[in-house]
Amino acid sequence: MADLTRRDTLEAGAATLGYALGAPAVRADAATDVIVIGAGVFGAWTARALQAAGRKVLLLDAWAPAHARASSGGESRMTRGSYGADEVYTRMAWDSLAEWRALSARAELPLFHRSGVLFFFPRREDYAIRAMEAHRRLKLPTELLDRKEMARRFPQIDFTDIEIGLYEPEFGALMARRSVETLVAEFAAAGGRYRRAAIAPPQPGRGPLARIVTTAGESIAAPNFVFACGPWLPKLFPALLGPRIFPTRQEVFFFAPPAGDDRFSVGRLPNWADFNEGDIYYGFPDLEGRGIKIAHDRHGPAIDPDAGDRTASEHALADVRRFLERRFPALRGAPLNEARVCQYENSANGDLLIDFHPDRPNLLLVGAGSGHGFKHGPAVGRYAASLLLDPDFAPEPRFSLASKGLRQQRAVH
Ligand SMILES: Cc1cc2nc3c(=O)[nH]c(=O)nc-3n(C[C@H](O)[C@H](O)[C@H](O)COP(=O)(O)OP(=O)(O)OC[C@H]3O[C@@H](n4cnc5c(N)ncnc54)[C@H](O)[C@@H]3O)c2cc1C
Image (tube, rainbow, N blue to C red; front, side, top):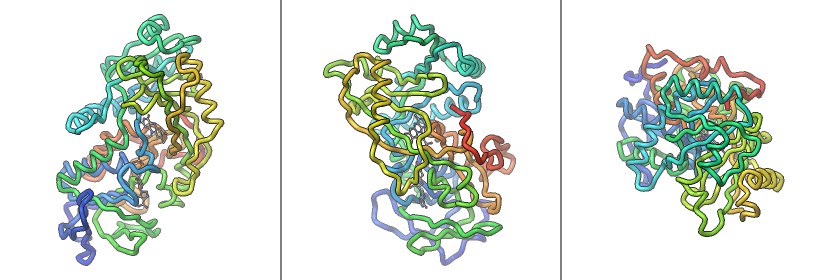
């Protein structure tokens, strides 16, 4: 990879334009060490990590940090440590939690609600046993609960046909869009440059990429580039990532709790997931009055993040309502507050992608959050920065491009 301290690939005529968040355009003469394209959760944490390492970073987004169609643009995202045998993600989630909490403590409004997470299972699934083993190894304070104990603690939930649950008291809900906006504002306040620009797909070729070009025709040079473009990655690198990242359409619903009833608030109802033989449903307590969120984790049909229809479907609504009324009898007939359509950007098996472009040694690809990436943002940012900056850094093989399959076969939950 290119040496970040080396500026000789920077072209004098390609001085970057910098924008402070919300401020008018200002010309910035300072050299740029890294351009990060994409201000979703991965790009924002990567920009922050590079900045913390003393690098001059320009962060770009075609729209805005965690905008409405970005995968990070939802109201909330769950953070949990349960990943079955996939301890690598348990560790990343746990490591990231401290940074989320610190960011939340600095913010004006909460970014993290420590609502607890309850993952329940119809029987002693291998997933639950292996998750519990990983949590014990990592000394996470996760509790293994039987049905009687779950029913005692959470009487709002009907645990019929459920045998055990894993309760993670330290985890909970991240306010997704607000978190990314806060992070980018911190990045800008600390001297990082953020601006709106849509980057055209880089020309194919070999060797270090010298510059990127905006769709308005402006050329911006830098020694290193990070493309953290979520579900747009296959459009930017169609030959390489078109067959390896599969954006799918996902629907999310918010229902109103009964008036005056606080059984569904943070502190009473945890974040939850019903393993349901691997066909997972999950939900959130009524965060900040938005409503009780519920979604079916099954992959939806393929979607184009630009042109895909964002109208929620009747059949998805009926599906989650059926589930909700079965597990939460007090929510029978609950009014729908809101429905949103988002997209997962799945790798074949659900593993993240954090690796260099095979033909471009100064171009790092970061993405494939695969419906579970948000919580790992801080760890992803640190990992990406280490890959760029530390020649001795030992990469995790599961995040490599080489490990990415061509056929969707989800394995990470
Ligand atoms: C419905 C739903 C529920 C989820 N639930 C959870 C959960 O509970 N817990 C969890 O941990 N994760 C969850 N996830 C996954 C998580 O939200 C994603 O993995 C994560 O947000 C991906 O972030 P990203 O930064 O890779 O992509 P994005 O947030 O999509 O960011 C990519 C950015 O790149 C920009 N961009 C793209 N192309 C260009 C270009 N050419 N030029 C400039 N900018 C460009 C886009 O505008 C966008 O802002 C969920 C996802 C969805 C959709």
